[in-house]
Each structure stands twice: as C-alpha cells, then as structure tokens.
Length: 492
Image (cartoon, rainbow, N blue to C red):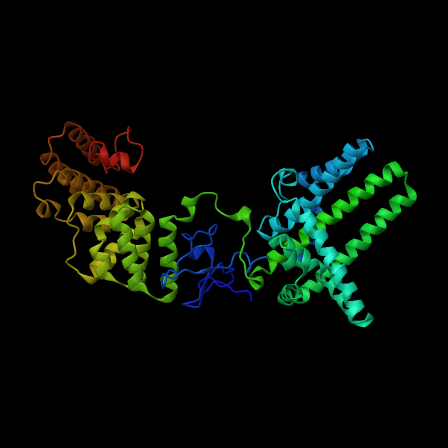
C-alpha cells in the first residue's frame, strides 16, 4: 500500500512510526539517516521503519523506453563489446576457449549484478569493473545448478507422479523462472531459488504486475530471437555471429534490469527498503542539519495547532542564535497571527533590530501600532533603537510615526549621546515632511547645543542654511544611503 506523508498530503512517505501510526516524508525527517535506514519519530522518539522509495517509484510499465536504453550506457556497452567481440580474435585452442569461457562468466556475473544494483535503487548501470573484478563468479554456476534442479524436478515428477503432474510442475517452473532469477540474484542461494514456497510467495506479493512483466519478457525473447534469426539468414556468418551475440547480450541486460526494477518497485511488499541512490545527500551533515530539524518541527506543530509549542521551539532556537532572521520572522508572524501582544512586547527589542537591519518598514509600523494600541503608554526604552526606528520611518516618508517615536526625546533620555541625532531627524522630518521651516530651525539649534562633535556641527550648519532657504534638508554628498547618512555627521 502506498502512503502519503501525514503532514504533506501528496508527498510520498519515506518513514513510518508503528507506535504513532504516522507516515513522514523526507522534509519531516531531515535529521534521519536514510543510508543506514535509521530515524527516530519526532513525536514518540521510537525507531521508525524506513520505507525507501516504495511510495514514490513509478510502475515499470511506464519506464519501458528507459529499459530499452539501459544497455546502451557506456559501462554495459563496454562489457558487451568485450565479451562479444574479443573471442572473435582468439585462436581456437585451449587458451582461446578458456578466455572465451571466462568472458562469458564475466558477462553473466555483470547481468546478475544489474539485478541487485537496480533493486538497491541505482538506475544507472554498475561500473565495468563489476564484471571483471571481485567475487561473484559463482552465481553463474549457481544458476546452472538451478536450471539442472528444475529439470530434474520435472523429470522426477513425470517418473513418480505421471505426465499430468509433470506438466503442472513444468508450467510452474517456467512461470516461476523470473522469480527464481530474482531470488538467486538477491540471496545467492540455490536452495532459496528453487524453493516453491519462496517463489510462490514472491509472485503472490507482486501480484498481477508479475504476469504483465512475464508477458513483456516473452515479447522481448521473441523479438531477440527473430532478430538473431534474421541476421543468421541474411548476413554473412562473420557478421551474423557477433551481431547475434551482441543482440542476445543486450536483451539479457535489459531483461535483468527489468527484474531488478520489479524488486525495487515492490520492495515494501517484499520486506526490504531501498531508495534512489543518486537522490540521497552526499554528506552526513546535510542529513543532520539542526536548522532543518527545527523547520520540520515548526511545520508539523503548526499543522497540529500546537502554537504554544511552536513559540517555545522558536524561543529555544533564538537562545542559540539570537539574531537569526528566519527565526525572528517566524516568531513575529506567529505572535501577530495569534494576536499575542505579550509575546510581541517581550521580544520587541530584538524584533525591531531585525526589522531595522533588513529595512522592513511596514513591519516596524505594524509592530509599533499593535503595541501602542494595547498599551498607550508603550515606549521603546533604548535611545539608539528609537533613533534607528525613526530613521527607517523617515526614509519611508512615514513622518508622523517618526515624530511620535522622537517626542520628548531629551526628557526621556537626558544626557544621551543620541539627543543631537534625534533632533536633527526631527528637524528633517518637519522640514521635508511638513514644510515647517521655523520649527525645523529651532530643533536644529537645539541639536547644535547638545553636541560637541565637529562633523555633526558642520552638518547642522548645512541643514540650517537649507532650512533658511526653505529647501529640503539633504545629507552630505559623501553619504551613499540611509545607513551611511545615519553614521555620518548625525544626518538622518
């Protein structure tokens, strides 16, 4: 049965918790180890069952064109070419026969490696070295023993039970041959490959697609045989023989890839799990990314309606990374959506600093409006933060809100170094926003009395000249933006 993720309907599940009876996709389990097939349920902490690609793999009948292209990748073509054409150049002596036999073993070894390789989730062929190096040559002998055992079983049935039972046994052996090849490729056991119970179980678990595949295999066999017969009848033997060998090898690789894919497609029914290996992360760290785990926990709890738990997760995350813009944004959006004014007030300093740093004018305005509506006496208690917030509002032409922030600044923060910058900003707001030149001049003169900084005093004099000419108060030419103006000469 194919299952979707509980939290992301439409996304295939990769993990299943038997305790909670919940299915999770890869996005819900970023810290799980798919390679080792180990993951802990985010709800109960129990070890979960890995489903691999069982819920997302497409049926084999939709991949027929890819099966036909499979033998024509570079690696299988090299194997086929070596095993087909090298014997043509060998002398017909003992050494030539031995080499030809070894190459035949290598070809069959490669074809059986294709089944296991595909069943493990590799849709690209195994490398050339698989055919000629390492162990695995014994599987060819094992397959020969399987054929001998099947024939012996049919003959024995005819001798001891009669012709009709022998025909039934022969029919089952022919029908179960692909299943026997699959079992042998995966388990490397002759006994398992001829065990009728194993074969019947495999066929029953796959169901009707097994018989559909069987039909495709018959068609492929007939097509391959017809092509080889045509080559033998119409071409010179020097060409027909290698061509027939090439076609037979190509057909065999295609067939074995289809068998491996059938195992991959029905892995859940067959009791194992594998995934598309090319799609797995290449580094361990990417699977255990703490940030992605927090994202997944937030997403799942939001969908469950556990808003208090989400708020707690965000606060814990911000303790580890105070200035994380993503977490601050999530905290702000959650509190605003819940109309949690207390949370907004408690975190307003860090929220405002994040908003100012990222020039989020509308968010600053909204936050200040919500807090003032809840508490008419609300005031920002950090003088530098007040000036920075008012500066952002000023540059977004939100003049009234900027003036509200800066009202009675010198009374609220007596002796602050921000008095002069604050009242320069008030003057610019009055002049540029309301054309109140006289008030602007008064505030500029007050700002001049509140600072001894030469550069700032020069800027104030420049603004005074502009105000007397009733011109917009512009910062020094050396400034290159709002942030630069703030730092240079106290201009805002």
